Length: 213
Ligand code: 3PG
Image (tube, rainbow, N blue to C red; front, side, top):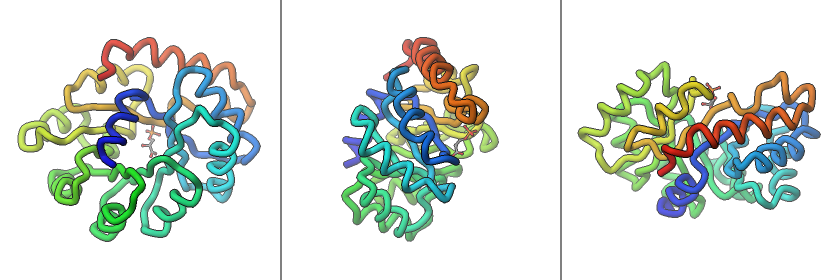
């Protein structure tokens, strides 16, 4: 299950973190990202329309590989499976959530910001984790320091990553992918400027391609 997740991330190491406000934006937004070469999408459970939006993308954008984000409880994990997601992500790693995820068949990426949180995730077999919030939690220096005691861990940093620093993160040997909301700016989404979103996706892929694992 975790191998499956690593493979997905290796193939698609740039993950748009998507918070949908209007359900009608979901499909054209996902199509714009896929057209720009970004297939792995994190749809956060943060808005009233998030479920409906995720279901619409799963049903209508077959090239998209949908992950459900902001999973904070076992209930969210079940919901992610019901929505047909291919994986789930969390900003954190509570013992209850880790236990539920370990018992589920859905590939799962817990979030960690400290050594102890990482140890709890590793103890349950989760060696691919989100590093959140990446920049406020110490940035690249923290990831580099965690590589010492935890050489087996692979990180997907999110929180404060953008076009300007994505390559720098991906250049770290233990960073397998990066994620963030910069790929779907609210101003573009509100205007329905899908070509701008496709262009940004393409540009980011081109800039970072030398560092894909
Ligand atoms: C999140 O879950 O909010 C992501 O980490 C996005 O963070 P960002 O908005 O700084 O990219």
